[in-house]
Length: 154
Image 1 (cartoon, one colour):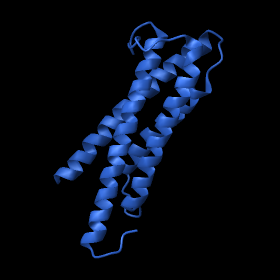
Image 2 (cartoon, rainbow, N blue to C red):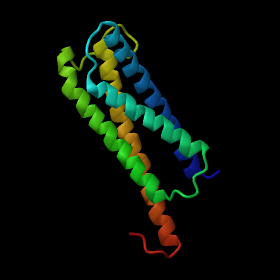
Image 3 (cartoon, rainbow, N blue to C red):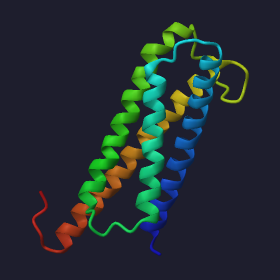
């Protein structure tokens, strides 16, 4: 196994763990809101859906052989997940103002809901960076393979 494959596996593992943390923290917050008979912000639901899509796509690309998928499609998928996490982050920022939380609260495991939400948002920013890194890696690999094979890469 070459170093680039190990790098990609390590990157996917970190993305998987962070997505699972985001999913758990936001799902817990949704459960707390539902128990209190409060309305659930749509940004929370969007974040849950994006995290689930991330987890499923990581499992599918690592477990199921995908010889038909080229690196170009995987690069586009990585970019789209980065954009979705960025949209979810901005959406949560716009909706979190109703909770009256400040950025000083950061405790994903405490009793303060503001800290959990801020932690999930910070992890979402980390996910954006990780998915962009993954997309850059895949695009560079795609271009290198195309150039080394003498193909015109567009």
